[in-house]
Length: 317
Image (cartoon, rainbow, N blue to C red; front, side, top):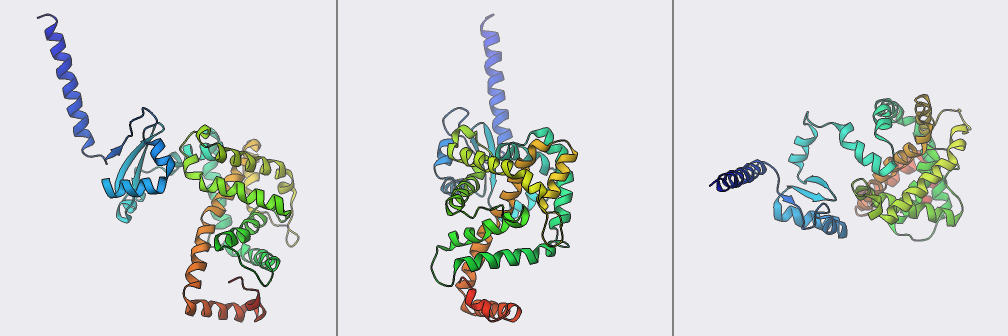
């Protein structure tokens, strides 16, 4: 009896704990755990993430959780749920992005929390709606230069064309004129590494780099490129008005906080933020215009009214 009584207490305690956990989980989204401890569903989601997410949405509903590589990731796939999440007072942006920023740009936690407010304020001032017009002239010149280099005839995959145009324009405007390589081999190398880094960013923000060797290699290559060119970026002066570039303003703030060693890391984040959305937005905008002749014709007439009829012949579409 002395042994049966403690054993009964333990069993009842385990049953009570199990029932409590089940009751607690009733209010949570369904969780896909996989069968491997810690790694969870990492293998499945790593093979084809978009397909995995779509199948999970169909099976479990618009909100579900995936446990992979020691982390719980909850997916919200409907507009109503996303709006509720984004407007929640419980959401802390800095805490939410700190870990992904550490994984994708190797910026330590203490540096991120120290720099976040200052850099965020500077970016809003430089790139806010009231000041972004200051970049319009330079962007136009850079785009014209890239379009002229293409020539008047030829064909190219639209996705590659958008990258071909936006990569050098963005680098030259935000960092410094002439930073983007002009050698064909180096251009190809830059595009390859940035595309790998961009396409693997979501995985890289969550998973250990040892599981993403190609992505890690491209990240290291981009950081080395920026670190090598930081002195030239800092010394650069615009030929027109000697105004500061966005990166120079960012570097000044980082220097004031004695964190110069993290300048390439923040440069990498700025490069990714500038291009990651611009490329797909531009791609789909052009695709939409090309698929609607009336809209295309109206746009071309507007371009001609501003820049002259000659611009019609330089159009890449």
